[in-house]
Image 1 (cartoon, rainbow, N blue to C red):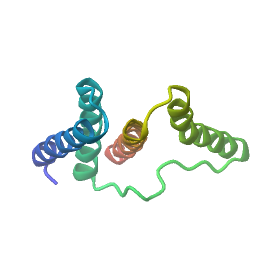
Image 2 (cartoon, helix red, strand yellow):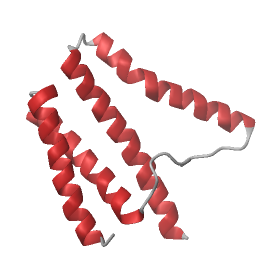
Image 3 (cartoon, one colour):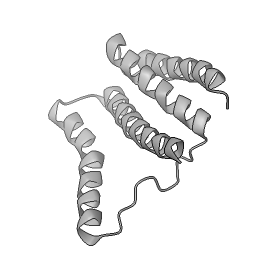
Image 4 (cartoon, rainbow, N blue to C red):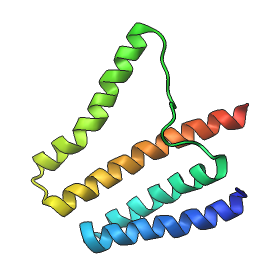
Length: 120
């Protein structure tokens, strides 16, 4: 997709995600705005580069690297739950934190894949 069209679509969808998060999950507009911008970035790179979300983005072949990657992924997947437990968030806030974490990880993966595609 054309980068200019992708940017427009990204801003609209990011604002929609932020609006839903603000309306139903987190009353703090600042945090919801941050989530909106993360998802705008996700949509932009997804639409511009056509990167599959379910594909393999990062691969390590060596044993120690694979183990390090697995440990890091375990930390990324459990830390948001630990944060929710630590600060005693209610259910809507919990979902908001999980939406934020998912968006952050997705954004970083897509940016990395887009950069790799651009170099080729």
